Image 1 (cartoon, rainbow, N blue to C red):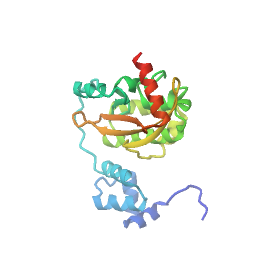
Image 2 (tube, rainbow, N blue to C red):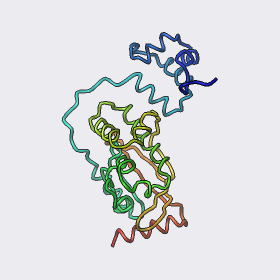
Image 3 (cartoon, one colour):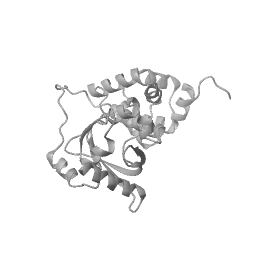
Image 4 (tube, rainbow, N blue to C red):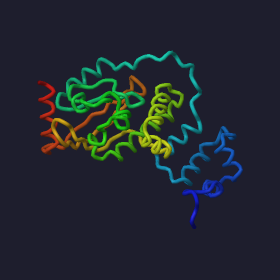
Length: 245
């Protein structure tokens, strides 16, 4: 029937998960600190969470003990990885940090995102750049996925000062970010097709693959490609020639 607030009541979640309402309330309030994996799985089923959100829930329920945090140092990208990217002159490639900041790029990767106030930070580009909605024709979908990726990073290391700084700044400066952050969606960056409207070569439709960098936990290599024989491939080749000249 009609409800003032959308969603399940606490006692309904408890029934779906097969636990008592009192136990569920203790979990929700943080008074029950050690739920079993079976309870977490039951809650995930009751809430109809997908695979990524379920994994995120397990990380929150069983956090890694806090390590002694060293002084913050700049992220370094392996010289071997830089050489690898430079060997792909026709393929845009970026290395992103945990908060989706651009740590490195090849020439075509730089050209793809050039010309914006926040070209070196993909989260701030989406939410703070004045021309973000023109650059991303499907801005709402991009924004949802970007916040979901940042939320996934928060589950791995919620005390990361870079993450706290990023979320704090965007929460103050962007109503759209506040709205999407409050949804608690999880979107691990893996693969997607994304549209761009580039100021020099027009519309591009590119697919990307996100690859983890095992030698540097938290870093991701993002590789973009156009469909062979498509107008986007021709536009990407034009952008490459402009960047080279």
